[in-house]
Length: 134
Image 1 (cartoon, one colour):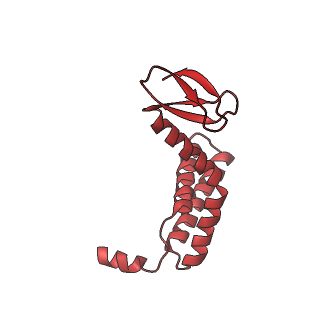
Image 2 (cartoon, rainbow, N blue to C red):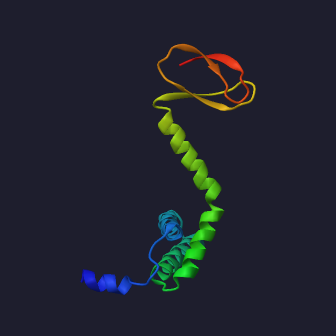
Image 3 (tube, rainbow, N blue to C red):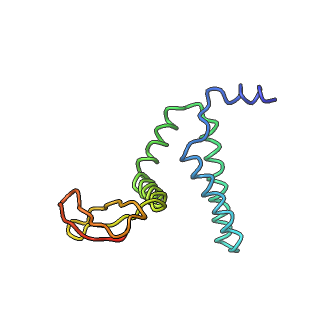
């Protein structure tokens, strides 16, 4: 059975980040449709099923180049949002070992190791010195 599925998927596009987004949007629309009734329920349900059908169409498509172009277009449109979340994740992981301060004159971010007491910090960009707790 596994071999049949592998042969069936051979040459097909599969799942990518745009496909994941459409499936998550479908699940969110189905959850939201549970809170509404009438016309809003119908619209959300139709939208959810359309997302699922489109996702499966993209997964089973043999036109790999077109699906890759669609995914690249999606990645280009969402780059700023993904980069912001990546910066927040990086900053949160660095806060365990470092204090992150901003220079009072040029607003440059400066990373100082924790546990050093009161230290004089020199900004690498503008050479301004200021005292902060580490």
